[in-house]
Every structure is written in structure tokens, then in C-alpha cells.
Length: 72
Image (cartoon, rainbow, N blue to C red; front, side):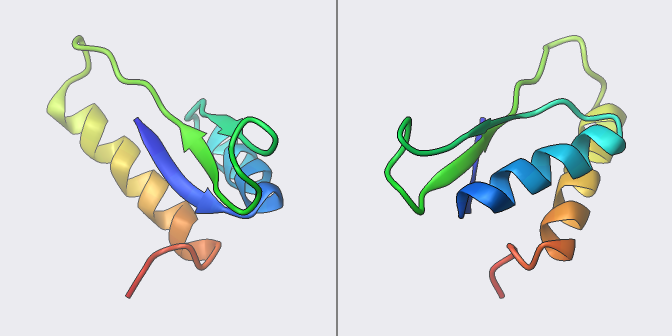
């Protein structure tokens, strides 16, 4: 599931911050995507519990907030 980030450096920064919280995600940056349209690629398994998915989304939202990536 892609998460739009925008700037390449923010994508790298977000991946590093997520990794520190125990979440592995891959940055997809230019030239794989147009410049300024970097994304974070996340993957989920059917074996995850609702609690695990909620924890992951809470962490992702927190990192996005820290990086000023959440739209108001």
C-alpha cells in the first residue's frame, strides 16, 4: 500500500523513522516516480491482527505528523 510523501529526502527520513519503531517500509523515489512524488511502500499480511494493524497505522501517522506530512 503506497503512502504519498512527496520529497525524496522525506521518504528516506520517514523510512528510517519507521524502522526505528519496528516497521519496515521501502522508499520509492525519483527516477522510479516523478520528482516530488516520492512514496513509501508498505505491505501487510493476512495473518496480522487488527491490533497489529492499528499499531502500525498509529506509528505511521505519528511519523507523518512529526515530518509535517499530514494534511489538515
